[in-house]
Length: 161
Image 1 (cartoon, one colour):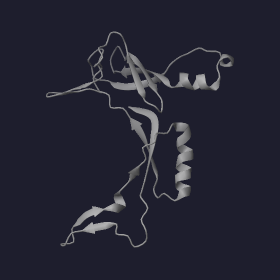
Image 2 (cartoon, rainbow, N blue to C red):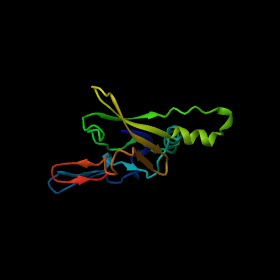
Image 3 (tube, helix red, strand yellow):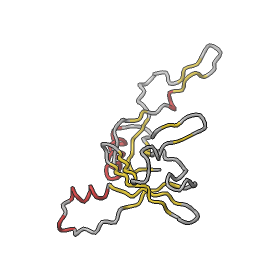
Image 4 (cartoon, rainbow, N blue to C red):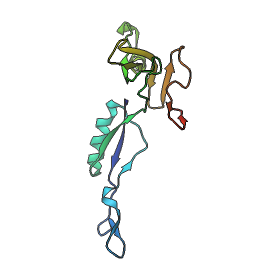
């Protein structure tokens, strides 16, 4: 599930005359540095990513790409145990704009409903809330669900989220 945060990756700089391809004595290609990409550890929001991409191109980074971050969530709905697709929806807060300043408006816009959509009824199951910020992602589940409800379970192991 995409979360609306981005990372930037680009090709490294090479000095003129530097080897970009390494081959063994038979001529077989061992390493190709032209396909190498460097990903920065910083996380950017939708508002910041366009400015970051523009400055990266101005600095001379070749083939700079933005990559949207995702959260791996199981396909099986933890509430009804049917296949579904997880999605986030904006919460519906009715607040007067005059009472809130810009910082509080941004805090409200970062909180989403976490629901699973199904093709049969009930079409949507409300799982909880998801709060997305640059510092981290916080998922708050309904009281009905156990703590490990969003973990992947397989035949041989259980991987917590």
